[in-house]
Length: 316
Picture (tube, one colour):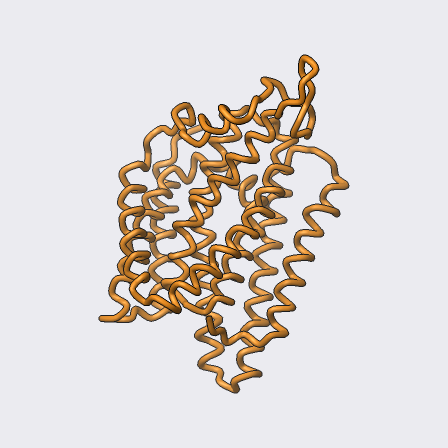
């Protein structure tokens, strides 16, 4: 797996991630369990987007300094931006499932922040492994691009047909399996994952929620990671654009939680994006769609869908 990023930029990326996790797990932990309001969520969302753009600027400068090519720096920076936007877009669908899980388990608002913090840490680890494995497979077997492309198209079609239908966890096979192997209390015990009932140590619903969030993220990663590989095969850009999108997931969750009804048609747009990206992968050896065109298409689809959602949003 070859990457254009210099070794020191890998170090800077790791430093960015560690600093972000420090903020989430140490600084914000001092606030204690509390419900996150819209203003706080908006401020943090803007902060994470700003940090991602700063890193993209650093990526541009590093490539320009290393290669001396402004055109190449522009191309790689655009690849990062497109990958970041795709991952952010697909994360919206992920967030709606998180909302379903939290509603199903009646997770108190004060405990939701911790669940998302742990979920983000797990997502970073799992997606890093999946991206490195996926990059190695693509380097060894070019035909896997066609498998990824076909999978994205099928996923997009499935998402389109499922959009607008009421979802439920009652028949979820993963949840049924977890309940069989993990005795669970009917009551929360603060932010604890285990409690004592009748002299026995059993899991609290919060641990079940953590497990469901983790499984959900793995499932969504199977969709989103191939989508970014359609934009670039550079593992550094795939990894960094993915991780920076994940780092802002917690804040975006609380922001969208307050406005979920206004984005009720967004899944249709995400379905079209998946079909477009899958088609791009299937055509890669016949016609390579420029990154700038891909970015424009993704932005256009999102804009149309959001305007469409706003105009048809139910009155609340």
